[in-house]
Image 1 (cartoon, rainbow over the protein chains, first blue to last red):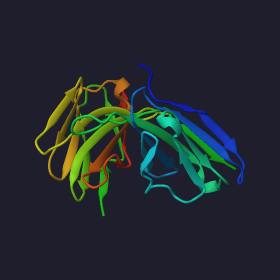
Image 2 (cartoon, chains in turn brown, blue):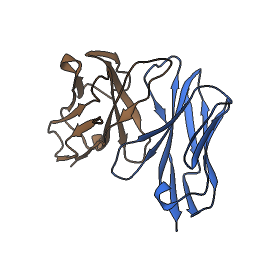
Image 3 (cartoon, helix red, strand yellow):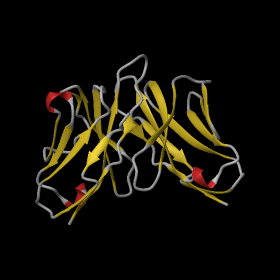
Image 4 (tube, helix red, strand yellow):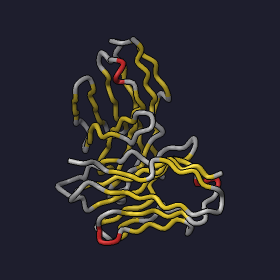
Length: 115
Length: 111
């Protein structure tokens, strides 16, 4: 079974440019999450999709970040315009909904550097 | 405010030297506590989920335990391949799906 995949693995852009990150969850997983780790900080939750609907977007830092999950399959996270403080690692995770709890399986991440 | 604190920040062990990592938490209501390991340049890899105080889970040289205030990850007779950053995360009863992570413990096991 293929795991969570993310593209690109790394991206270097200039301040003010736009970047779009993509996440393909494990097949059959209805839940998809975005997290990020910026320099010196712990991994922080950004948002949670259930199928194509946003269940919780309380972690999105501001309106420069836009996440979509059309059709309930893959998801994109767009940063527009990018700022220096957006540099860090962006992780996607997915899970099924079963029983008492869902285990979240993470992708390899996208390393974003904003110059 | 919910908090997750891991200690120590870093741990250097000789091969075979057993030790424990700590994850203390303060949350309104615990839905589950998760342990992950993360290797450089990779995403977190799931290890265990613990739901209630007194619960224990084991996998190879790793054993996780849970009390009402903290969780321990015991590493028995570690090998160099156990070198990684170990992350603790909690999910609360009022934030379904949202993992709150600690800063992690970086473990280095030398031959």
